[in-house]
Image (tube, rainbow, N blue to C red; front, side, top):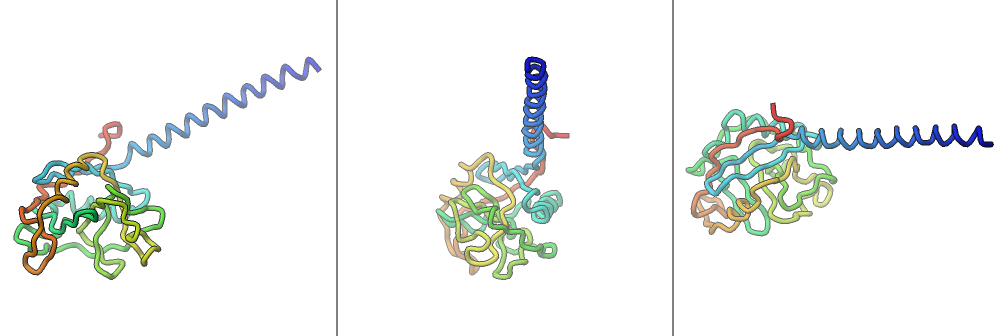
Length: 205
């Protein structure tokens, strides 16, 4: 019996050690994946908003947004629609409230597990599900009715504000008016000066 117990304990110790190391490896892999998520900085007239994008849940949407950003499309556009306790929307109109020419629409990547929670960024669209182009919005509260499957196909979340939520709330507090046939337009223009793309610090090139 003695000759059996010692080898058995030795084997179990090795097995536990391997399991522990695999667990650490999985955690590091998960952390690495998190660190590889792209980030954008939305510079506005009210301050900077940092957004971490999620290509793992909405790859086409993220690629579309990054393309517009890298092409300088968002420079000089407005947050043209601001509704307190709901959302702020921008990325489609210049400072004269003229709608900019966009690329072709993309398919709606909304999914029930990617919810429109406070601080998430999602694509704006028309009543047609696959009509999103450049415009996006940032949720000011948990807007469950925008989620896929609640009232239809939903609105595609593709990232989350990870810095500068105070700037988002400041924009949301702006007094709004009706202008050029559009409602909820900030009386004092909120300008998007630039949208720059970068990676997280640990994954920076």
